[in-house]
Each structure stands twice: as C-alpha cells, then as structure tokens.
Image 1 (cartoon, rainbow, N blue to C red):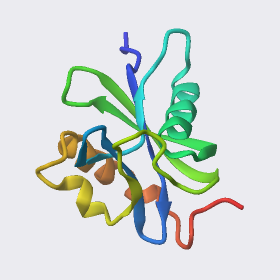
Image 2 (cartoon, one colour):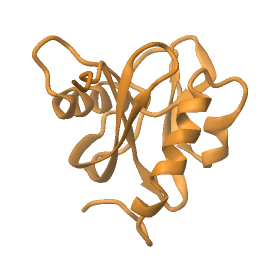
Image 3 (cartoon, rainbow, N blue to C red):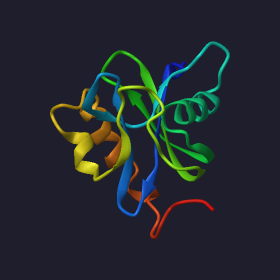
Length: 135
C-alpha cells in the first residue's frame, strides 16, 4: 500500500524564475512554498493553504507532478501551479519570499536541495512556454 504524503510543495514559474521561500530565521535556506498537512486536509487543500500563508498568493490550479521521500522521512507530493492570483510577498516575519533563478534552490545552504533537484528533473515536461501566470 502506498504511503500517504505528509508534506506538499508547489512549483510556481514566472519568466524563467521560481517562487522561493526561506526558512524562518535563515533567509538563504530556500525551498518551494509548502509544508505539512494538517489533520483532515487533502494534499491539495494543504498546498493552497501553505502557499497563501507563506506568500500571499492564491493558487487557482494545481497539477500533480511528483511524489518522493523529502530526505527528512516524509513523503512529499509536489505540484506544478500553472495559475494563481496575487503578488508574492513575505507574509511570515523573518522569511524571504521572491522570484529566483532555479539554481538558487540547489545551493549548499538549502536543506532540501536534493529534493529540489529531483523535482526539477521530474517536471521538465510541465514547464510552459511564455509567462505561466494566470490572469
């Protein structure tokens, strides 16, 4: 039986850049917006909540892309977020939120760099040409 995911992340693309968030208190430990599921949440509900809480963006569509161990003992399900509403901003005090070139998420300072690389490898076929942003 397949283990249910305990965490989710979302990949948002804009003009060759990826929306990244940092861990609180460490602005160079970058990853994708996301987090753990709350009791009773579906992975999709959890990701929409986490993206909104961390970045102020409302995800309007999700495409499941990949599922694997996140390197910290959890199954993490990744989604491509092809459309959204709102502008990215730091919502949590002490955290970085911004559009970065993909290589920033593979730096040694990134706790999830191995998972980030797996996700990049899996979603190459999902990346649209053009802006990628809804509305």
